Image 1: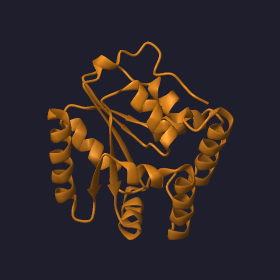
Image 2 (image 1 turned 90 degrees about the vertical axis):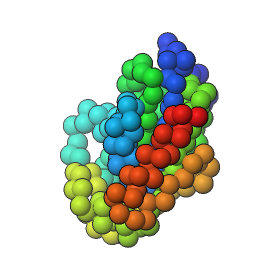
Image 3 (image 1 turned 45 degrees about the horizontal axis):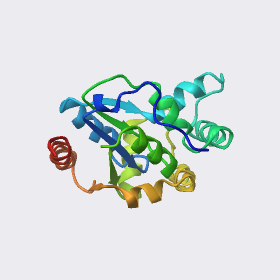
Image 4 (image 1 turned 135 degrees about the vertical axis):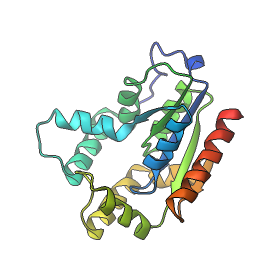
Length: 193
């Protein structure tokens, strides 16, 4: 199912669009915090998924949200969450969009924003698991087995391909301060390019 760029959106309004992908707990939210400090507007595709999920009236859990997201992709196309996220966008000079999971979503955003770049964030599973336990989000996996199942689901959607095809990659294998410095340097480079 081919989609056209965002209806009514003037892509010239967005000087810089950074698309962010990575496995759960890799550091995407922290990257976005740095981008916000640099003046970017942020849009989380996962928030859009959770917004639509709450309309079902079901109890929120990682597996329930994941099944819902997968079901919507099967019904409406692999780029449905990119399309729905695009409806949340407001005009701004720079924005960061987090949560891409497959190449159809990437294709949709690249068509809509010709100057968009994809940043992949990588962290080991053990580091990601520690961070997930620390953040305590309601729909996160509560144990390593749950994270492994979530990883398998995310990989089945095509996130591994996106990470490999990223225009830029940040390895999040150190402390928070180091990761924030790496993120800021990359964001500034992309913005100023």
